[in-house]
Image (cartoon, rainbow, N blue to C red; front, side, top):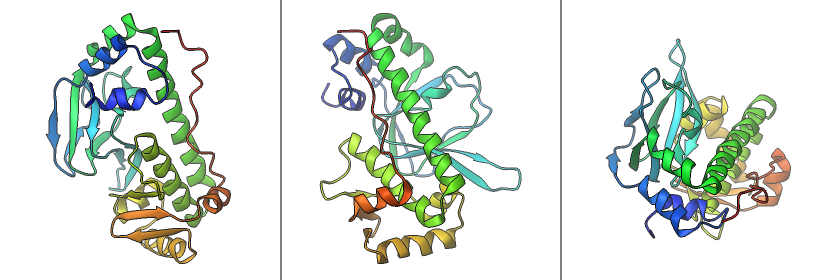
Length: 243
């Protein structure tokens, strides 16, 4: 039970019964190891399995006809990868590993016991999916309205908040950022050159400090004000079925 990333993550938002925990642990029964840059699912293929991300980072992305790439979502430990696509027959985009990763695959039918036996877990997973979509919409707003400087600040804050939710950020505000300049550019609609220059400017302005692939946010309040960052949406559990 201690090794269940789903129990650890979802338990931060709502109290879970022992039965709820066992239902979640069942989704992590099998494990597969993936290498960096390995593709997990491909656009157009049937969605037969979902995956719990146990360790590592993943991203979903689309390839345009002219070869350009648009990164859509980032996935962190404890996420059910592309849960929002469970209603689809075929994948709408590709998913690949940004780092070496361990995934726990399970068939779509693996969620049936959870939905049938635990209305509380059903409400929680539904809420997590809605919140993830809200986070994505906020980033779309940032890409559409913000300058390159504001976009990069927004992304760093978003990642920091997500990692805090899984205890993967340090108390000093630091975290490992395994994204290349190309990854950041494709997330934010920028070029590699803009990303490089912008990261340097943000560091020179005293907002962050970089040490290799680690980033430490030095002036959180200033960054939040700069890009009108609302933080990760909270989950209202007041309407959840009781244990």
